[in-house]
Each structure stands twice: as C-alpha cells, then as structure tokens.
Image (cartoon, rainbow, N blue to C red):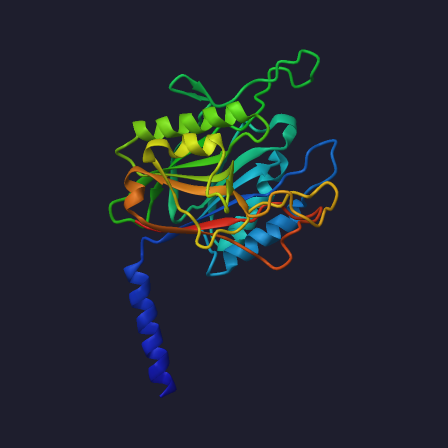
Length: 304
C-alpha cells in the first residue's frame, strides 16, 4: 500500500511540475549595506547565509534575485550565496550608480541555466525626466559622482519557455530623502513602461512609497507610479510591514508601523501572467540588529 501511495504522489508531482514548467520566482531585498564612516548596519556574511537559506527553501526558492543597498565589494559574496542556494551556475549585473561612497548599488543575479541576460543599462534619464543627479559640492571628494540609484533595466530570456520568451525586469531603489527626485523616478518608470507596451515588464525593489495600511494610500511618488493604470501592484495578501525604523526614543518601537516600502509591479503583457507576491517573515527579523537588514525580503511567483 505504501509503495502505491508513493507512486501516486510521484505521479501527482510530475503532473504538477509539467503543468507549471514555466513558473519562476523573483526574490527582492534591500540588504541594508554598511556605509563607510558609519556604524555597521548589516553583516554581508549573515545576509549571504540568509539568502542561501531562503533559496534552499522550496517555498521561497527564486531563480531571479534583485538586491539593493549592496556594497560593491560584497557583490562576489552575494553572487556566491545565490549560487550556493540554488546549487547552480549564476550570472549577474550590478549598477554603477548608487555606488556613491561605495555603499548603495543595485545587483541582479539569475539562475544561468534558466535565464539569459540579453541587455542591460541604467536609466539615468528618460523622456526628458532625470532619475538621478550629481554631487555638486566642489569641496566634496565625491564631486561629480552620481548620487542616487538609477533604475537598473535588464532584458531576460527564459530558456525554459518553448518560445524563448523575453521580458524586461527593472531593479529599483528609489530616492528616500529627495521627494522630488523620487516622484520624477516614478514618472520616468511609468513613461518607460508605456513606451514598451508590446513587451512584458516587471519592476521590483525598495520604492520608498510609504504605503499606509490604514489609509490604503502611498506618497506622491506612489501616485505618480500608478497613474493611468500602466503599472499594477502585485499586492501581498495579507499586507505585512516590510521595513523597521527605530523610534528615536524607544528603539524597540517602529516609527512607521503597518506600512510597506518594498513592491513588485507588472506592466503590459506581464499583467496577463498569473502572479502573486508575499512579504517574507522570519522569526526574530524585526527589530533588526547591527548584523541583519532593516527590510524584509519579498518574493513573487509568476506563471506566464
């Protein structure tokens, strides 16, 4: 009887796998890099172990990993963590912008057996709208450096697709302290998606949209992003707080409870795919420590 049950389960698993052969996941996470001259706010060794653990878990195993706030020197560490977690070869691209003070780059890592990177560029400006700016203080050693994080635009080809399906993935970490720039970044992303109407587009990362669970509203940049319905948010259900910000008077309290900064959006043909996203909650993740990230990872599952 036991052997028959095992056979039935194996047959079911085979059918399930074949029915969803095109399924893939994206894991997006602000890993909260260290900043030179400041107290450490995360440990790349700890974060890399957590990434590997998430990718080993069937529930959060993702073939595409999008990271923000990455110190350039830690890129090889995170690349190896993804390779170890997936137990396969990986390919990657990283941004040049956001490396201001060597602290804040974007990084995309993919399962090289599943996805091929066909094109990549940084969107510093689009349709006359700037998505970044330079340091203009002549007394600064960073004079002329690109200060913020330009969207990292990557075209991926799905090797598992019978039609060699390609789609665009944009990794983002929109401006935190510069509200006007954040709004312009959202406007540029909206216009870019409109101009690529014939192609599936996904964008993932830390958008700093301050979406409040009680009011169901975000800030002005969120409004600019969703205007006209070009972008559709894969809204987690239930909504879960994705960022911890210590209360200055009581570090055990979150200054912005019940809000979300991390999103995955779809546009164009990707809206027709079956997709859902979740905020990953792990025991002891909040409040964060001086070795862990102050953001929770988010994972999205797609069936084109």
